[in-house]
Length: 322
Ligand code: SF4
Image (cartoon, rainbow, N blue to C red; front, side, top):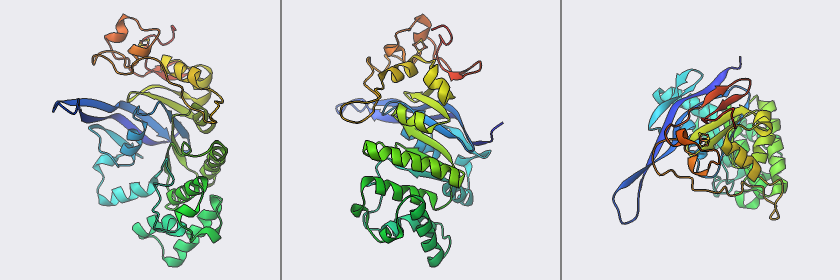
């Protein structure tokens, strides 16, 4: 049985938004809706869904950049929301985030070396010489040269900036990396290089990844298991090959049928899926407005994520019969 590194239990995060600029009435938007999910040590768990489905909010909750409305996240069996100061420090060292936009996530006033060693300074690890040694080692590992150490972010290409971001995430030797759309801001030709680099680093450093993307081709290339998210809920979870060869949930099937392998502008993306995403009421399946299989029960009861024999998990009333 694989060891569970992160165990997410009934995680819920809502945002209260004004219904219009003229009204003081608030609308409750559940960005992460009762998510139960495990990340196993050593795996790459892919998290896929359209923009705005809650993927990044989930990443921000795991990295403690957001507080949940309710629910828990356990790291090696301990609830991270009950940590004391020392435990928080330990957790933050072990869980690092790689951001989507390598330019805005790097401090323009710091050199590459300054950016990469900053976490060591914050956590008071090592001395000047050992930090410099760590910088050189990591720059080499991510495909940069030590001669580039004193250059500033604007002197690097987009791919090189992302390599700096990756080196910074690795400098504390974390156990879990959360990569939130790490290649979506990069050119296609650079994307493959960064993805392969992340794969190699996973082996070298014995990492676990939560890999977030809206791009099913990228998720397929990277993941061992795949979780599909729709309006804040996980609607399907299975091994990579199962999701792509035998998708069960109607939403997963739509995503897969909407993904072109190549489009004229050179970018792979989820094509727009027809139908209004939002429901008229709180009852029933979140996908009912767009689902071609909808039956009466779909508007009455919310389907829960259930185990399917020899497969994985799916949240649909009609699993197995469509
Ligand atoms: Fe479609 Fe009903 Fe399944 Fe929801 S529960 S995905 S509406 S068939």
